[in-house]
Structure formats: structure tokens, C-alpha cells
View 1 (cartoon, rainbow, N blue to C red):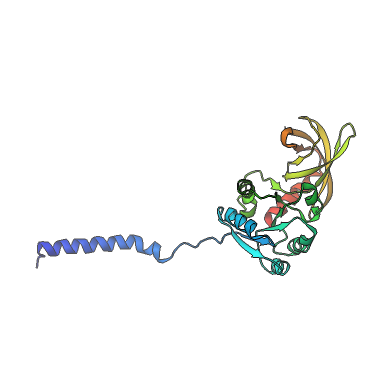
View 2 (tube, rainbow, N blue to C red; view 1 turned 180 degrees about the horizontal axis):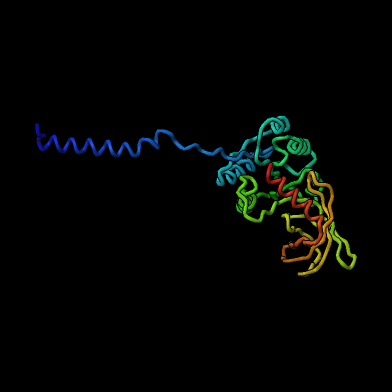
Length: 255
């Protein structure tokens, strides 16, 4: 028996709907799993600072967790990708807890406030970056953006790890001075100093990096930004001591 015109139109609509559902319903039945966002511990921060940093980290898909007196215990038991603490002696137990935890020994550690010299006093805990006070939203966002790849493990081909530690510098003429590291890679590093260095100037630096004892390595200045007291150096390829730095960088990224 044939269909009436209205029945044919209804059947065609039904068949079209079945075909459409057949191609769209299956993917919707099993939604793609959402990758958990990185967690950032904000320790003993005042409400205004906490709000601003929470907003900054949220813009890059990271979740902020407020902590007070329970921070040392939680950092021993829970996994965090980053941690913000004040740069003062009262925060040292938190820094120690994070760095001694199997889960958080390589956590990206931000300092809040204090000078570079203050941060150097805690070099053994390895601050990766410093939020300066008074905290400004633009500067805070810029710092989070610069360190996000280290938190989320989205690395460029040539990885530069931001870390603040004291660097002793010896020039070819025997002159000595101290500097503060900014970033380090397997092939070189950048540091800040009030000394005016020239491109291609040779030097030897020594520094310590968390689990890596103090190491010396030779190199040369490859770029300079004297207005911001920032200089970059390339490690001497023939200096085999740089291989220890390379191994440390690779180990740091694997954790």
C-alpha cells in the first residue's frame, strides 16, 4: 500500500532525524574528559592580594587554593603545581614543607614582596619568581604568563627555567661580584647585576640549584639589557661541568 503525500513527508522527516541522531548522539553520549586544572596554593595572603592573584591564575586556567595555618601539612599530603608565599622568615616552614614533599619538591614557588636580596636569603628553597609589592594587576599577569609553561609543562624547544638564586661572577681580569639569577637552561643563563658587562666578555659563574650543589661553569656574555641590569650568558661548550646543569634541568622538568 502506498503512502499518502502527508505520510510520505512525515516519514522522510523521521528518517532524516534518525540519520542526524545517528551521527551526533554517539559523541554526546561520552563527553570528552576535561583535563584537571593546575592547582596553586596561596599561603597567608591578605584578601585583596588573594583576590587579584586568584583572578590572574584563573585567566590561565589555574585554580587557586587559600591556605593559612594548615599549609605545611597540606603541602606534605596534597599535590600542587605552584605555591605563593610571602618572602619572610615566617614563611620558611611552608617553603621547607613544599620542597621536602615527594609530590611538591619541584613545585613552582612564587615569592610575594621583599627585594631580590631578601629572596637570596632563601636560595636553598629556590624561588622561581617574585611578585613585587605593591602588587599591580598588569605586572602580576605578565609574571603568571611568563611562568605558565613551567606550571603546565607546556615547554618550548629550548626550556628556560625561572629561578632566583645567588650567582658569584669572576671576570677574566679577576674582578668579582655577586648577581641574581633570572632564568637558567642547559645551555646558559640570565642574571641581574649593577655591573656593566659587555657582549662577548668571558666570565665564570658559580651557583647552587636546590638539589644541585654549588657548581662553577665558564661562559661568555651573549646579550645585555643594561637599562634593566639584565644580562645573558652562554655556557662554554667545552666546559664539561655544564653537563651537570643540563642533567639538573632535565630532572627538574621530569618531576
